[in-house]
Amino acid sequence: MSRFITPLKVALVGEGRWHLVSPLIYESKVLGRTVTVADGFRTDFASVPRLPVVYLLFGGTAEAAAVVHDWLYFSAAAPRRVADKVFLEAARVTGVPAWRARAMYIGLRLFGGARYGVGSKLV
Image 1 (tube, rainbow, N blue to C red):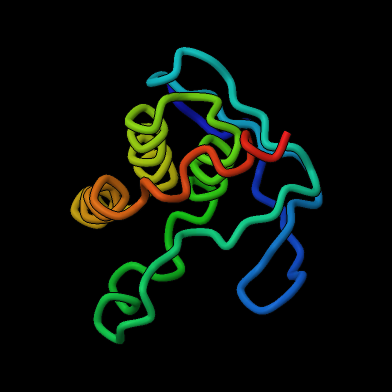
Image 2: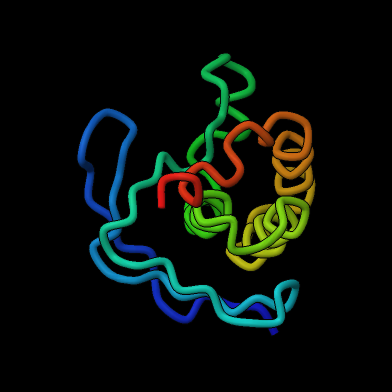
């Protein structure tokens, strides 16, 4: 069963940038394990283009799922395709409608690749 074990708690650190003030823990059936995103991790949530209709439909949704996904991309803790599937799974767990979660997933598959593994290259 997939579920968030802890709630998402963040603080604003700059325009469109947030950091976790407590760990976010997510149990993923897709991964077959629990993901812990440490407090202090920075995120911009879902990177939705600021085009009026696109942002209206997809902006401000799936924040907790986006944080888990950002962590998986940053750390390369799972292959990119799996990280994207975890986003889809986590979005659905938080109640995002299937059509919206699926459209966001397709956006990740088409345009998310450049951000994958960025943090793992810093270590």
